[in-house]
Amino acid sequence: MKIWLDGGLQDSESARVSVFDHGLTVGDGIFETVKTVDGRPFALTRHLDRLTRSARGLGLPDPDHDEVRRACAAVIEANPAPLGRLRITYTGGHGPLGSDRGEHGPTLVVALGATSRRPDSTAVITVPWTRNERGALTGLKTTSYAENVVALARAREQGASEALFGNTAGQLCEGTGSNVFVVLDGEIHTPPLASGCLAGITRALAIAWTGARETDLPLDVLERADEVFLTSTLRDVQAVHRVHDRELPGAPGPVTAKAMRIFDERSGHDLDP
Ligand code: PLP
Image (cartoon, rainbow, N blue to C red; front, top):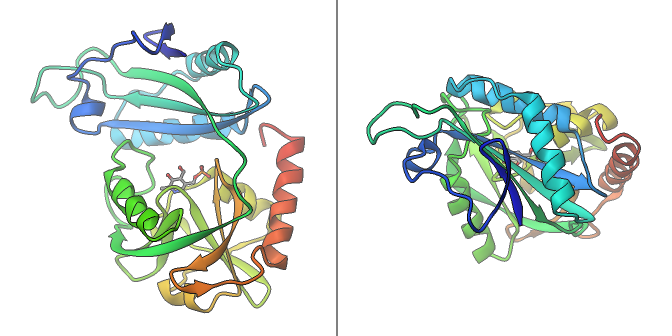
């Protein structure tokens, strides 16, 4: 497979990143996952804008959008797939052990993996660990994902595909790699960014296209919501049919099914909404 590194395409088998890269040693890096449909990236402008926001949050130099676009196009061309996932990783670069930041400029890697269309519905759990809604990294898409990996493993042990976090105030926040929406009395609600969730690109589009409201929601709203759904780049809009032991029969319910339809239609018409 061909990936982008050091300004050009390289073979993934022989491409080398320093063992002292700060993305590896201290998680000083950021990333984006971008869906590709028939060889074209979806919502790339929004992903690049978020990449820049994450870089600024970590104090990394602004990524060069033209280079990242060129890298994405080159990697897509070199690895044709009907439905793919581009992974853009951008780190502080490498430097001597103990240095605060890499000394040779940032590292940019772009790779492409295949993916498949998500099932229409899935099971989720909640985990007892909390998102910190006031942390230095809150809202940034950093490579420090170990907590998400642990939570996702817990979900898989329980036959679920996603784990949802509350925040320190006991409010519903987000999943390990998704945003969460609930339907109450026919209206769609999702936690506000102040809950500590990532500003998901699919979340923003779902809010714009369905009129969902941003509402502070206690974690236990999951015990009474009429419908629950997730959004993310790789899930699009995905219904939840079970939260822990609580079955949500018939998922996707009518409101979620409509949101799924609207999302499919609108995103199919505009690849850079
Ligand atoms: N929340 C977290 C923690 C994520 O990692 C992701 C995506 O990976 C999302 C939410 C959903 O964001 P997006 O819709 O931009 O994929």
